[in-house]
Image (tube, rainbow, N blue to C red; front, side, top):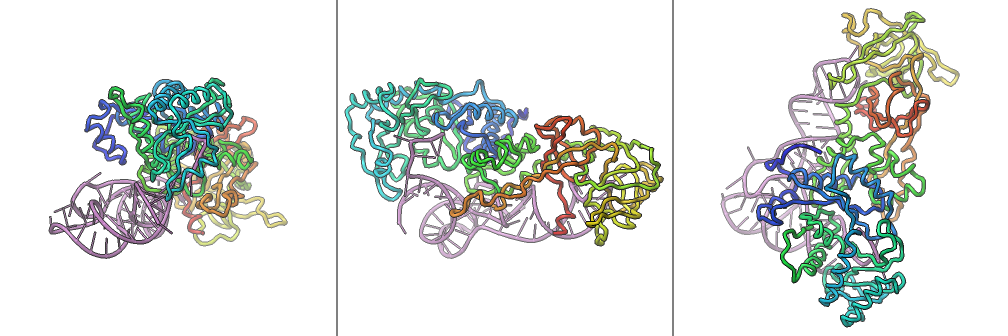
Length: 566
RNA sequence: UGUCCUGUGGUGUAACGGUAGCACAGAUGGUUUUGGUCCAUCUAGUCAGGGUUCGAAUCCUUGCGGGACAACCA
């Protein structure tokens, strides 16, 4: 958690302005309490991260708290696995909720009592229409609906039936409890919405205590009220629910003493990212069909996927800050997310040498048995990270891409007769090379200039390029997984006639074996991040073992050479 | 042919009746033992029409564009 004090002068988004206004008007006894209310039916994704940063960020800003509340009103879809992963992800992001995690299911008894209150007020009734009949009677956005024949049951009958619903006397779908509002409302959600339905399925927390479960609309606002949430922040699609949110609160608060806190719903536009899908349903499909390795596959936009990919909590928070919060639909370029992780890792990641596609280079005038230890800076952006030594010898590996038999003019790397600097070592000159029968370069022969060792006066000589390298006999092997975007279309789920899976990128994962790393990487711990010099940021995969190192590519370095050659 | 929300550079987001700013992306130059970083410069915007006003991105109005809403999901 940030320890920064409230910065009221700093302009934030419109929600802060609304809160400031409520504060100025003295609402809610000048208290602020937010909540993050996930349904435990899937893993959290980057869109949730935006909401988490918003809700917890507001709490921090106003020196207030934020609750974690699981919206667990549908046992058909919800699982403990998700409850656990959600908590892990929020903690990883760096936020701490107030007290213990809360659950809407904790409030089932209270909700039930309030439902009886509504029945007694003539504001709710037990209906026996089938889902099809209800749909048929609901009308359309342009036509009013019809009233249910069960709408005007007697109080006694409603009370009796609702009790028997709870007792388990009816099968799933046989009866429901509906609010009695207005079947002609221009807002579909006010056309006698369902409050309770019968589901004979054990709940992950309440077990088989209940067989009737409250719907979202009847649950959310009341849960906010119970917890004394002042600002209930949600995404735009709930905007049309707001009148209902307020209606339910009006009903349960009628005839009661004026409460100190009356929660207020405020909506903002959800995050959309191009080249990805964000719906939990589609993410679940990718997992279930084995298209990705799991919810935490590094290509997934889930928080656990980003974590495994090498994203830092700081970078995700920076991203949430940069995308802003407003009420208009938006599509954020995935490049901004990549910018954020580069920005963060640039300052923190140790620079190491790794050759992903190695080709052997022999320094012909370097003694065969000699090993020189070269000093190299751990991070030029952070002097406090110090330096280390790396072994240099007659045979090294360099990147295959760093040699061209017939290089173009602006190729500042190695080619016949060309000179380059080996990072932290010597300037070398290419004298010869060897090819196999397929034309592949197998060995490159160079001479080195002993006067150009880093630190020596002659080392300042200008050469066009600097290459990374590893000593062949000291190098350790590793597997490196290169990731690209999962989808090739900017909006994979934005085409009515095309399934989003049609746009899957067949090259979203490339696994490289036999990559050559400098020796110190043998001790790298899972999730540790490094900059592979001149290549990008990589992290140790969670499955990496000391005898089988696995690195994930988080993001490449900006590459103006590659860009210029497009 | 309903109700509600929403239109600011390519993408996001500020400006709350008084000089349209910031970030990313893009371009150019400089520094550099990472073709990274960093620094400098540049490109590019108020959906359209009408009205109110000394003055409108901002208020009103009419169009037009985009989105949401008819799950016993949340």
